Image (cartoon, rainbow, N blue to C red):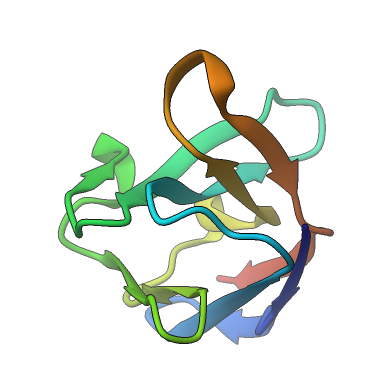
Amino acid sequence: VQLQASGGGLVQAGGSLRLSCAASGSIRSINIMGWYRQAPGKQRELVASILSGGMTNYADSVKGRFTIFRDNAKDTVYLQMNNLQPEDTAAYYCNLRNGYGLGSDLYWGQGTQVTVSS
């Protein structure tokens, strides 16, 4: 399984970006795809996740501004980021938990940089 992320860039505060992450390989029907971010000197943190059935989960800091959605036919997850703020600056990583429970495997994509200027 491989994950290919794209869509990062430089944006002014209040602007928007959309990240995408395409998974390829043997993807199980039950899985969780998500976005994490890591700012310099900080730990990697969950931004948002979405189950294959559509249930979503968001970090409190992005609720109301970010939306995660997926296209199961394309095995692709998206992160629509609106009203970006300088504190959103980080490297963003997508991941895939392929399967459910003890039999699942975790995969990470390469990071894509998001920089928000004030």
